Length: 208
Length: 206
Image (cartoon, rainbow over all chains, first blue to last red; front, side, top):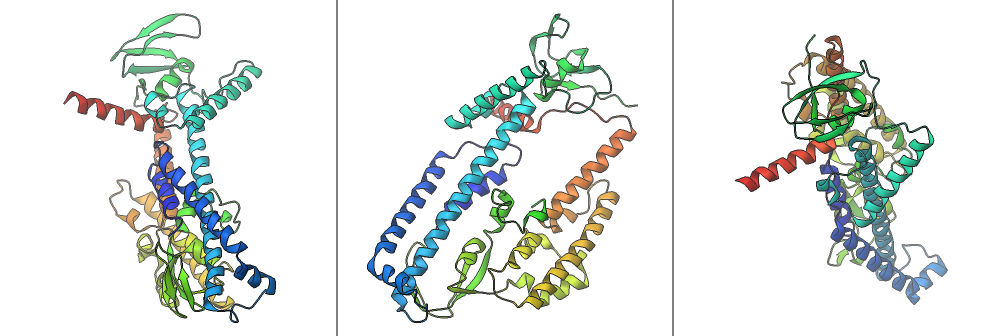
């Protein structure tokens, strides 16, 4: 049945809720090929004499032979399949772009390697261009980093432990410190926030 | 389907993944005419008038000229009676899992299995059932601190989202009362891929 491949593509994407699965190049190409084949068949049928006769007379479906009627049905069937494939493909790509934008806002301008391999070439270009547009916007508003402090902060400093070796980090006042695994630090929130979101640091939960 | 308001509007839900999956559900159809060599499946088939075939909703909607539709049994009057009597005990996940969204879709003018009065009755049933279930869900979410009841498995997809939201809101309220709100958290995207990376590393070391 036409549209089966497209449904499978969407199902795979829906299953991967909070992650970005690898771009399914083969399926996308197969769906496009299927649509092209359907549309070619349709063109063939529509230009046939039997069909043009049917359209010209605008005959009632009860009055024509089953063969002609079926030809008309098949054309509608294929048209529905093409539309369905198109809808699935557009939705698939839009959803992925949405996820790429979310990764940018949560993880900073550099996409982690293991996620980057899941992007297609054009998606990488998109991510690159999106980064540039965002950077331009932030420069225009006085170098504010919009992705930081997404909830209003209660204090300017936070206490964190280091989950993995981070290395050198430059603080807002220009000092450099080296963050080492399993050590505790008391640092400005603005510096720490992106690192926490990337999972390198962890805020220490203090019970009140 | 998080927002039922967009169901009416075909173009608004065009990109909605849930809507696409919902219209993949099948309903039974009967051929209106004798048809030959129909390319419904991989091999062409012949249909005589009245032959039954299961088609996905998106296809059935487009082919209503050639096929008569039959109301799925989880929406017929008998089931509506059950739903009216005791909406809380029905397992809508089993019947759905996108029960309400599909029900609304069936009321579209592209389907012809019922006259207007029946459709209105069905909408009323769905509305009442969902209203009663929503208050039941919010009670459950407020009472069930350890999520031990298996209520989740009985909910349709929209209700599941609602339940998860209620649980997470209650948790954030509790955190706030203990002065633990406003924590920095790791991004869910990165957390997930990171875990995978760590698993891969562990496997390599083994």
